Amino acid sequence: MNITIFLGAGASAAENLPIQNELFSQYFKYILPQNKNAKMNKELSKFFKDLFFIDVENQDVEKINFPTFEEVLGVLDLAEQKRESFKNYKSESYNDNNTSISYIRQSLIMLTAYALNNATRDSNSYHQLLLSNLVKEDLLKDTTFISANYDIHIDNAIANLYDEKSFPVMLNYGIDFANFNLSKNSWQRPIDPMVNLYKIHGSLNWLYCPICNSITITPYEGGVMRIIENIKQAKCLNCGELTVPIIVPPTYFKNMSNVFLSTVWNKSERALRESDILVFCGYSFPEADMHIKYLLKRVQTSRLKDNLKVIVVNNHSKKKHSLREKEKNRYERFLGKDVIYTEFSFEEFADDPKKIIDLAK
Image 1: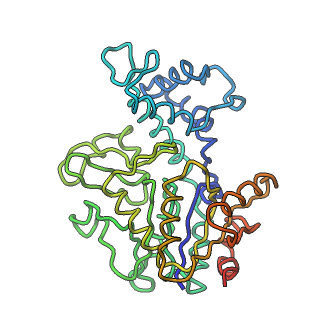
Image 2: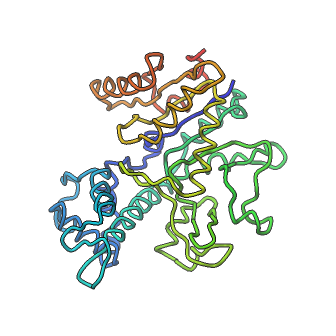
């Protein structure tokens, strides 16, 4: 029995990471005050004041009704596509009085990284518990993880399982890192037995080099932060040029053209074709995620195996019944009435994954 576990933002929220609609408030409340004069922070503060009439430096951040990430990035992406501008924000910056739209967009991506990396330092106890119980039930070897999250909770939990003598299981992201060409002290190419983790929206510990088209992993740390905090440590291992993050932001116009992301998506599709059971954890099946819906529909309609059995685990104590009903309808409307929509939370799934997986039998 092959199992795929799909991790959405709700799984990370169980570890106290901010969910998408909390990223702005978390950043402007806790991170911006530490360095208000940094160029990125000054430009972001000005941007929200100019376009959304929000004064993040003087208003009570907890009471601000922030726009969603989709809305903010959506208008920027449309402006870039249409080669149009907003006042003081141009497609290209030609003088010191204008800020380029691309700079603001990159700053918003780094804002996301900052907010998540700041929270990722805390415990990842539920991800560890899930893996421990999958091992105990002898299910881990048959399980593939697909994550839509940038944080490295599940990464670190899998990597920490490795023991050369008692449990030599290696973490496999499905892509080749520049680290593989270095000494044994660096991140090693995984060999069987492996646990596959496919991060379809990128990761905080991936640094991409657009010069030589390679990717570096920074094990156990959100290396994306080096790009701002210590640029000398964010250089490509192959050619020494500066790297950029691979983080696909939450927007209607997702760009999946990066060669490494394409590989990850292809392997995710292959894993889903071979899976018997797909468990969605902490994922609300939002309207904007058409790439994921496209992937699932391709898998559903071209399988040689029996129909893929889908289980949804996305409840929590504060979730309103009306929201649950809307979410259930989204799943059933797109994937069919056979979806097993449960009342379990990610924490409960981590505590007893076999009980929930057995619902599909």
